[in-house]
Amino acid sequence: MTGRRRTRRTPPPVLPRPVRATALAAGAVALCASLTAACGVVPGATGGSGDDPVKVMTWAPQDTDATNKPGMPAMARAYAKWINSHGGINGRRLQVLTCNDHNDGVGAAKCARRAATENVVAVVGSYSQFGDSYLAPLEGAGIPYIGGYGVTNDEFTGAMSYPVNGGQPALLAGLGRALAEGCGNVALVRPDSIAGDQLPAMLDAGLEAGGHADAGDQLAADDATEYGGQAEQALRHATRDVTRTGCVVPALGDRTDTFMDSFRRARENFPAVRTATVLGSVDQTVINATGGASGPYEGAYITGWYPVVSDPRWNPMKKVIDEEAFGDNRIDPADAGVQTTWIAYTVLKAVLEKIGDGEVSADTVRRTLNDGLRVSTGGLTPTLHWPYESKLAAVGLPRLVNADVTLQVVRDGKLVAARKGIGGSNGTADVTRTLENADVP
Figure (spheres, rainbow, N blue to C red):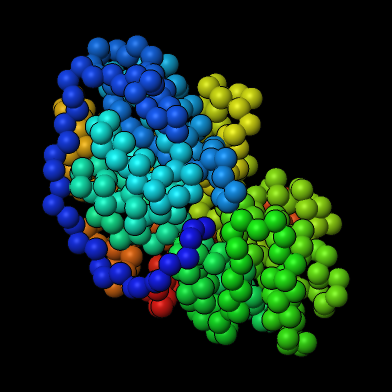
């Protein structure tokens, strides 16, 4: 949710662009030496058919001063090793190229152009905040983008995008709904960036659905080393109404824990407030580091896309991690990026199984996705499919097909399912109707 500031304009609805067919080069197996230092290759083990491997790419920022997602390409590598050690998909080996976009628009475009040059059949389970940089090269090459993180609205407009979750729009709309009843003034602390510009409307849509006023919008740098001024400003807004407990919502990605360091010091001079945020900004590791049950997140609502990591529906993913990446501390099964990558590769597997013995190319993968394929994710999401336009096309999000949100709460220092607050007894809500009323920028 970070990026460099630029003039914002509301994009018109994105229509499908003409695409050129991209065929797999016969007998070509890309060597790691052919990639830049930012990219790597996971060579497939010997498959059962002798066919060329199915080549895909996963990218994410790593080793930057802002949000980093090293677990996503690491999870992709582990998945490929697991698939190949079990005979491939329809006898075909899976080859994963990885790329670091460096949290930079130029880097994102380079990754997309490399995907086209390498003739990958899809980009799968990736994170980048620069949709305006990578989507055009992918669309020009006809390469589908399966299961992006949902960090910007571009992923929900691009004709070649096949998102598996509701991204930041769904998380913030769900959080707003959960906070509307119990909070006084709400202060949102978010990045001063293009991606950050899209967050207030989503939180406000959820608040308004519960009859609450809009949140105060507090901008912050996404790579700061301290946030004392922003913390004090957020606290002043949240405590303005002395009759109700205010709420502070930091949504700064990896910098959220840095904000909380400043917030803990600043809050001593203000009345008590509650905190709330979204997964991706906070996870169990951050909760532990900030004091656990005695820390600022105790009692906080946190929205996510998927069930809590202790849910048995995650057991297949955990089994793959244990078998192929045991000890790799980049892969945290509780991380929303790792989980999204798992679900995205579940979609890819379903596509390849549907294609069967037919040609596997970017064109056939895209056509299979467009022809009404329905993908079960074992209950981690609703059954996924991608019609030409979703129910949210009218608000400029035509590719958003899964608006389910889970509500979690920090209880005794542990992130657990809230079981109430939004949605049904399982703490899950479909926020499609809430998003239909959002003033999307």
